[in-house]
Amino acid sequence: MYHAKMENEQAKSANIQVTIVVACAKNGVIGAQNGIPWRLSSDMQNFKKITTGKPIIMGRKTFQSLPKLLPNRNHIIVTRDSEFMAQGALVFSNIESAIGAGKAIALASGQSEVCVIGGGEIYNLALPIADKIVLSLVDAEPVGDTFFPKLCAEWVETSRNSFQKGQNDDHDFELFTYERKI
Image (cartoon, rainbow, N blue to C red; front, top):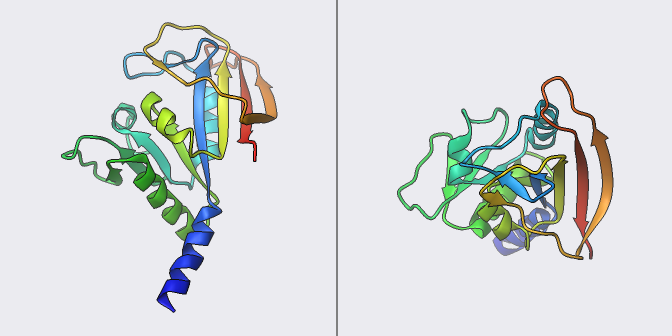
């Protein structure tokens, strides 16, 4: 009986999508000196809408760059630092365990996806596992030290929306959704 219940839970968690959420400049830059090299209030509103209520997975540096825990989201951190602890967050040493925990949390809370929110190394680790990418392409080419990997042919664009520079934005941007080809 217990074995059948575990298989059923595993099957349900397999239906939880792994979504990468990233803002990237035209030159691939996603960060500079542990920060974001632009200000896009409109994109932050999109980020909030996409991630609220869902588990979010990030690297230690990304977590430490946040001003505080983001409300209504379970924070899951991936780090090689075995001593690292963060109040209000779960900490794992590898992406697979973090995604497993995220899927369990999503399943328990009635969500259908886990969001991976950075940084560069975490995106590289999550890309082979991800089902979907929500990419804000910023109309800029800033200097940076962290980059998003180039997408290969296994990703297909499923939607695109353009956003004009708003009052609290440094640049125009486009919001793309990509899904992995089956």
